[in-house]
Image (cartoon, rainbow, N blue to C red):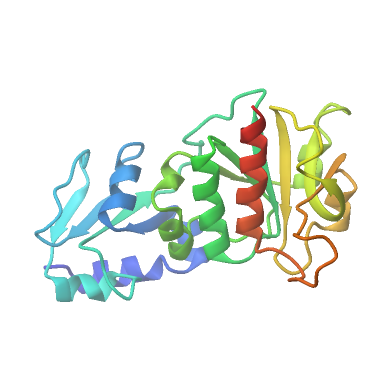
Length: 247
C-alpha cells in the first residue's frame, strides 16, 4: 500500500518548479525505468507484482495494486512500474571532444524533445545543449518519449550564444535553414554542432548569426507545392542520419 503523502509527493513532480526544488523526476514503464537504473540510483520505486527489478540498490520499494498505481501514474495506461530518480548535478555522459553534438534553440514541445533525445541516442550523439527556453528534459512526457535514452544522452541547459562564442572561429556550426544549401551536396564533418530551432520560428536570429554552415533539407520534386516545413524531430533525424552516413 502507498501512503497519501507519497501519492501527493509523486504527483507534485509533474510541476517543473517542484522537480527543480526537490531535484527529482519520475520515470515509468519497465524499459524506461530499467535503462535509468543502469546508470543512476532510484530513490523510490512503486510497482505491481509483475516486473522484476534489477539494480534497485537501496531504493525504497512499494508494492501496489494496479488501482493504486493509477493514482500516481502520469500515463493513461500505467505500465506496472514507476520510479523517482534524482536529477544529477553532473552529467551521466561526458561529451567526447571532438565530437558531434546537438543544440536545441527553443524547442518547446515535450514530445519533440523526448524524440530528439531518442534520435541522438540512436545516432551515437551523447550530448545535447539546450537553450534555457527549451522544454524541460525531466518533464514526464519528455522522459517517456525518450524510451530510456535519457540514461545515455546528457542534456545540458545553457546560454547557446555564450557557448558558441567559446568555440574556435573555424569550429563547424550547422543549422537547418530555408536559405541553406542542399544537405545532400554539402561537405559534412565528423565533429561540430548541429543547431535545431523552435517549432514555429526556427533558429533565433542571434543563434543564426553564429551558424557558419547553413543546410537545407530539400523537398521532392523541386518546385512542387508541399508542406511549409518539417517537424523538428523529423528534421533532426534526417540531419543526423546524413552526418552519420558520411562517416
